[in-house]
Length: 477
Image (cartoon, rainbow, N blue to C red; front, top):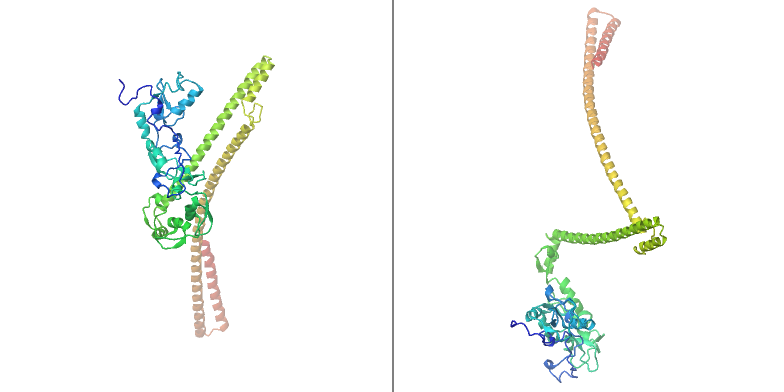
């Protein structure tokens, strides 16, 4: 006996627990001409777009066992074939229209007569899958079993037929709620700026375009056009709480914008970290681009190598056949060799394509450039070493010259001192000789001429002595 959660075989897929159709049928009711004719709760809309379960986006990853082998999306109204495979109802119907066999094992299947309901456990797993509302602008997420109710009854972004009596253009449900019974595509005059605006876009005009409607900031009390209020709140208002611009790096300052700007002007400690993270992100982006570029280059290189190997093999085969004098086979082989390479190469010789030649020349020039760079670095190192050696030698010579200059200065000082002593002794001897001649002349009554002559001779002898002593001193030096 089958388990209680397994349906009996032979039941048609029309009794499936999934929605009866992946595309819900529209409600064939028109809007009333006056909103007072019927209450809002009783008003029905004509849906312009139908819910497509195969186009909805799922939250998170879906188990592969819940994917249809044909459409590769989670099962929609699943049915099971006699061979044990499960498909979406529409997918297996389309497959059987082409061939009456199972798409997986090719066993024969009769359309609808061999369909069986899938186990209830699969239905429960499908119902619990979290999905996003397919309407643009709606961020609602819910289990898949509740999506149809949200789409038909609660979502403000579902497209419905305009409420005008003769208009069939689409509008969203939230726009239709504002003006039941009238066409939302009629143009009206804006009461603030006087522009002609579509009635459906009037609220958007007030918020984004109308410069005649003013608003007062609730925080700083500044008056400005209403379209500028949002930007003012998010960027300029000094009284609104805002985070530090380096909050992505970890700064937790969240105060009024005027205080935050003061904090940033004084220097946030997380600025360096944030800039480093930005630089790291840029480096990672460049690395990813380089990795993709390298992958493309490797792929092109592999294709070139494959073409080159095919050409070499074709020419080798042609050469062997040429030795056997089979001209017809040579032409066939050459045609095969030419067909093995793309026409963009534009070459027919053994040497390779123009692209290969250019790449080879580029690699050769790159290797030569690398050699020149290495030689330049070696030459710079040698020149630096030579300059350092000469600089050390010059430093030693300068030190030696400085030492010799010091010795010469010392000797010069000694000579000048010796000369001063010699002059002082000569002057003292001359004075003493003159005094002695005056004294002897007065006592002996000698002639003045003789006393002058003796004094001269004494002075001359003393000078000669001093002159004789000076060369002797210089000779000792």
